[in-house]
Length: 78
Image (cartoon, rainbow, N blue to C red; front, side, top):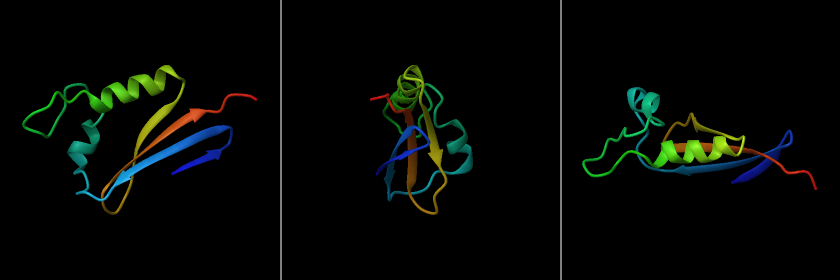
């Protein structure tokens, strides 16, 4: 889902998997943090770095089930 709000564009991504525990949620954007046996744990750290390099923000959204993220980008002037 995407929406414009206050001069910013919001892209919201979600799934219906298991929710994150609070300790995992607190570390989700740390480089090399993973809960999987195989993997580098760089995915969300790289996403955050790219979004922030574009003067945007990425955040874990609170949900009752699943996991959701919002990416906020400033809209370019026409």
